[in-house]
Amino acid sequence: MEKKIIMTTKAPDPIGPYSQAVEAGNLVFLSGQVAFNPETGSIDATDIPGETVQVMKNLDAVLREAGLTFDNVVKTTIFLSDMSHFAAVNEVYGKYFKGNYPARETVAVKGLPRNVNVEISMIALK
Image (cartoon, rainbow, N blue to C red):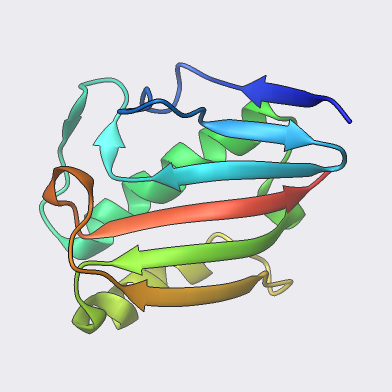
């Protein structure tokens, strides 16, 4: 099985040695996205809902580059700097799916890159 690297300028450049996404067979594995605005190269969000919107926009850009939408997502992982952000993230996250929700876990972690509060990764089916 071959793997195909998925990259777009409409999402932030990786901040380490990884790809925005990798297609392998009929699955696309999206690396975790944080709230970097790809146009400014900075984190412009000032609150948890704002961070989550930017994260979802970044994931949407990578999905689109792969020819997919949120309807193709089968699994997500949400990383939070504090579980107290769960409700705010959940409210924004839920707006991107049309009821056909993917499997998911949400975990609080000690820290995230660049001191962000939200990171989300996904697996999508082609």
